[in-house]
Length: 402
Image (cartoon, rainbow, N blue to C red; front, side, top):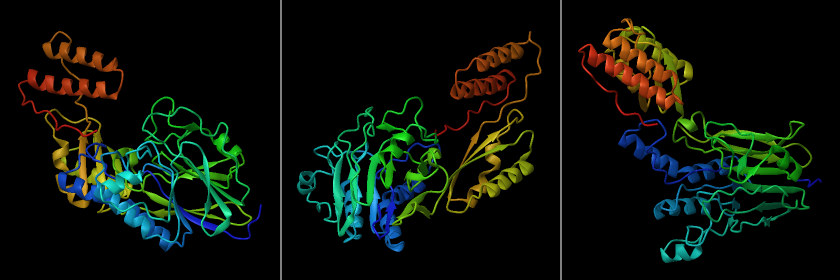
């Protein structure tokens, strides 16, 4: 179909406002954690500002605006004010499994009224039913938006696109879907079967919508059909909170021309980048070790605003504290945490000595470990145990924020 008019919108989701930020493998200090929480909670303001700057006709938000039901009311007020500032342009929201639209939640007008809060702005369309619902686009008879809502955080194994909702007859038909793409393999992807409204790329293509704004996965990802044509995308979360959300964060500006394929632009969404850097420091002493890590940070593109975890691998002499050598590098970025995953040299003692028997047993235990966590425990036990047997100081490493 031809509308004779193009449509441009900004897409963003998975803001997870109110996140505690107590995990994620970064071991944030209280000061950095507080600053980062404020940046997470400013996602709506940044999205609206980006949408206004790029001249978007609408803002599409397919779910997980906040992280849990206990998000502070002040955070929701901030969100509502940001959406209101986008008026008269519309905002379309399809609640996900974190910000579900059940009774008694922040999507419930009765709760907002009871708390003395402002209602949802008139320019915001919230899909409140688990059943697919079609709504018109204000001021555009050539656009229809279809969406649905989660009503609880429970896993939804049903396939939302089998069968798909009927495609509206308008030239531009937009789908808002919070769910799991079965072929997605990002670092935030769950192990095993995807259980949150799963669907396939083929099912999405067969639904024949002009565009599908997708939410749930935290890394930006375009979904194409068998011919390589874009049929929808995840914008990912706009604020990196941990190592599973490393790398640049973006908003998606999508333009649907009258008679051409969708055009997608990636707009930076975050001034900071979460980065994970792994460095082999085998046999390096203090000076060369620091130089190698500094070079690795530069190669990774680490900048002053970034939040970085450096993991040291390879072999280091007994008693070495390579992480201590890197403390001066913390001034290069906003936050630097170092994990010492180096291993001690191979045991040299004979199998009949106490050290040899101990080392042999621990190495066998390590070889039989079921996962990386068990191997780390065996490595640590080997290092600390050999230090104790040889009369060296026993200094356990600092606890790691995984």
